[in-house]
Amino acid sequence: MALASGACPQRMLVEPVPPGWCGRSVPSVAYDGWLTKVVAAYVDQKASMLQDIERQRPTEIDFINGYVVDLGRQFGISTPANAGIVETIRAISRGQAAPGTMHLAEILEAKR
Image (cartoon, rainbow, N blue to C red; front, side, top):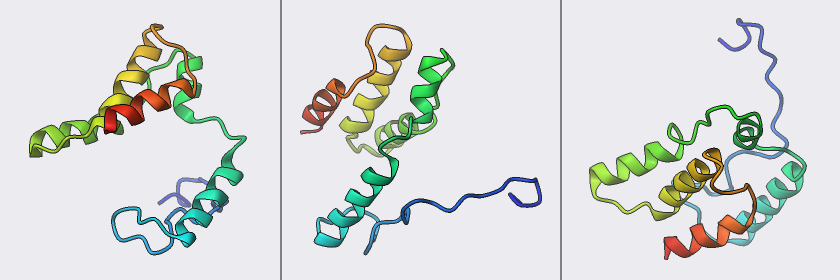
């Protein structure tokens, strides 16, 4: 379908699925090596959601992380990291917070 529509798919810089993936991340030397490659390959890339925020366009946060939060509520599963990401992006979009890595600690702390 993509080719028929004229899209020109690009090869990913790093294999998108971690080695040994079985539905969740499992700490290992192979996983750590894969993650290091991902970070190195994409360090200069700007996330599409940040581009949306900078251009004052609606983000896809509700479709991505918001969906996870909604499913968690539906099944009685806590999703504090996803909920923190949703609230952070909404605050940034409303101009109540600035984009930055300082939010990571807050989100990770809420996860505990």
